[in-house]
Image (cartoon, rainbow, N blue to C red; front, side, top):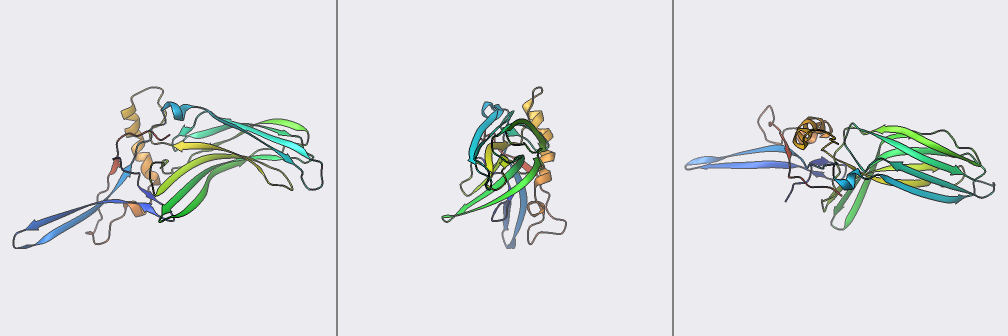
Amino acid sequence: SALVTSFEGKHGSVRYCVKATLRRPWAPARRARRAFTVIQPVDINSPALLAPQAGVREKMARPWCGPRGLVSLAAKIERKGFTPGEVIPIEAEVDNACARPVRPRAALVQTQTFLARGARKEKRTVLASGAGAPVGPGRRARWRGPALRIPPVAPSILQCRVLQVSYSLKVCVDIPGTSKLLLELPLVIGTVPLHPFGSRSSSVGSQASFLLDWVPGALLGPLEGEAPGGPQVRAVRGSHQDAL
């Protein structure tokens, strides 16, 4: 079976090492251990990850003592799959029928989910964010949000039983005096970039060095008891598997 991508999180980690033992007659056994990093390919060129993502939310809001009014939000992005270094262009429309101005915001969020012995822990991190101009009462505005750039992060991990790393684009409207209106669009961060031209193998190779930017030092450093100078670490790419 394919190996899960190496990962270092707050409540757990995925680490790999190889151990070897050399046994000789009439001599002590010699042992060695080396760490290595696994990068499981996630190809964003699959049809499911190239499909546009869109959603609509609405809420009857009554900010403070003003009259009730309907606030609606519609947002879309060009596709579901992206790779680190790309930007996510956002298109949204806000219809404000309440008595107070509202303001749209967007954020790229990473969610780490850890599952063990019946317990579940989550850690959410905002990777990039931006806000638009206020939309006045009784007005409708089209918002071309800031192009959020994806930093060097781990690819999505969706096929592991004890650890998941997922991403989403959260678009919301802040309404004074009441809870915000939230729309969430799921994303998949891959390792094989969009390739309108060229071969897939060349895309994988060109991406490997960039992917190592997100690997924490704990995954690359020497293991306890190793010789000075540390191990020679190589990135290992597992067999191809689409993440849907």
